[in-house]
Image 1 (cartoon, one colour):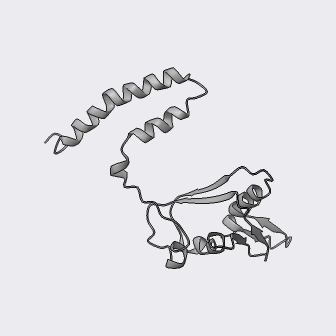
Image 2 (tube, helix red, strand yellow):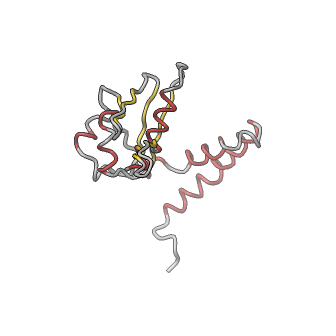
Image 3 (cartoon, one colour):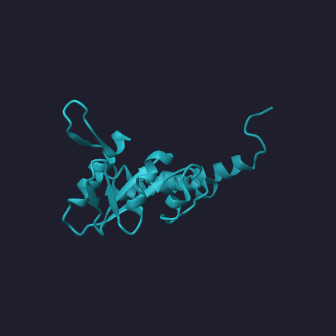
Length: 155
């Protein structure tokens, strides 16, 4: 928990921010009116997610073990991308808006588009658009054909 939220060094008795405390503090110190997102991608653990309840409710406040409170600005938003909510408590789930995307429905194209976006500094727009058309023309039908086969591995 100390790595996430922070902890007191037993030798020096000094407080050291954890990763979440550091990121929240940094985004909240931004004085611009630009919207900022803190994105947490990975499994939910009941121990650390429960400490986020005060961030997720109307208070929008991160409460640390050293009694410090960091108030989120109206421009700071949080997103949790998780595989399931098996260990999340009803108290946590009720504070969040949920969007469920079935991986089968998502398909392969968003991954290609995301990859092409990473190439903006290396390829111009027309080259990236051409690559996208090639993917759509050849990969799409190939994937559809493979999915129609009862088994991919020959018997």
